[in-house]
Length: 544
Image 1 (cartoon, rainbow, N blue to C red):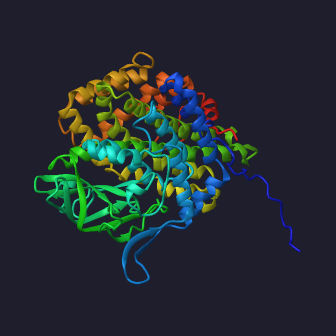
Image 2 (image 1 turned 135 degrees about the vertical axis):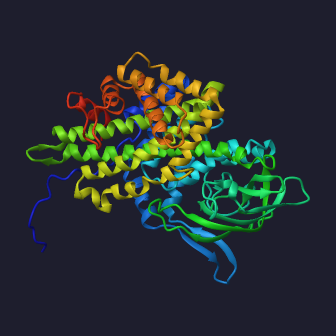
Image 3 (image 1 turned 90 degrees about the vertical axis):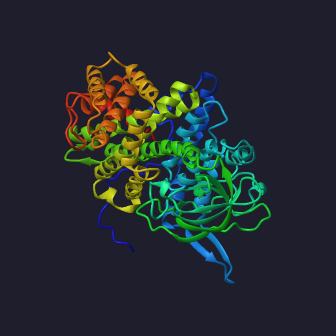
């Protein structure tokens, strides 16, 4: 007979069985804003269906199992044959299958595709973030492959398919494929021009054999990879399939899997090429220019992914505070806790609004929007991904000791939170990329200033921040040393402009007062007490 010493009370119920999409007002409103009316209803229904699945107990369990059972490398079979395979838990395949089926690799060929896909990626990442890596790279490979129309015609239908088929087989035998990327080498890191992998041309035009290594190659069980190697004409982009058309394995030796801080469900690996067959993508010597389209798309996914992690952390914090009582009342009603939650909610909404705006610019495809993306993507990637970790850490603290244990899910979010700031170029790389765009592409700055200028006159703090930014841009002395400061201000001004135009007044007011007006401390929960913080928190609360 079990002894009864106490009754469990004052614990928040599990946050389960809710619509991750529709409960996120900033996200749902953004989708409605950026999509044409004739497709908005269809997209809303699709995203709501995905949101209900993401908020289900089943999807949450898939995420737990995929991380508790990380991938395992099998270099050889039982007979000693080299196979270089990675085994994943079934939950990983279920997550990937549902994501591909929801169109999360299909943005380039359907109306409003980038907004719909970004919103779906933001929703589904909240169920589990690690499998987002192959989804992102598969999506991002499309514009790079378009440098070679023949390759694009062959591979694009497979990349954008809504069918997921696991297992290594010739790509032509599969209804859908996934792609990865290999740029980083031991000696170079972000300096890809220091790559040493060699590409030897074969007799047939466009075919090469690669010899060398890659220090970081994520999701090595993908069907193909875009990689950089040194051809006779210089650094060049190549397509490396895992399995050749005749069914034989391409030489793709997985040396080991990385033992990472987070992202545990995803296999990141070190690989070696030894006379590995490849097809050239684009011209010799134009490798960076060819693959940069893929990099730009994955950088935007870093913004979207960080917005997703922030949103999930904030959602969990507000949910806990709405049920947990302490010191004579429910936490969410306590002025100090309300200040913390509102501060976190502002950061989350600003990230989501900016991510969707950039996705909409991709859908537009006009020259002005492309110019805006040239500056706004690295600026957003720099700032939003850096805000992710402190937001998630503070959200965890809102749950106290309950948030520090694995069962809450917050530790997994926290371990995942630094990744997007590192992947596809860390902070300094993004800041320097902004400087290059400012120096070489003046039309990009024109597009950026036109975008933030659309909110001029609506808030004096935003107007002052724009004026100060223009002063900083006019002074090029010591520009590299203060690049981070400049890019931070650019991102904040852009976020402020978007919120002033589109968010409720209480959200825009609080953001401008704190982030642009200087009425803010150095930790979350230091917003001016005169603001309507209750309305900000209530807007961010998920309705279960």
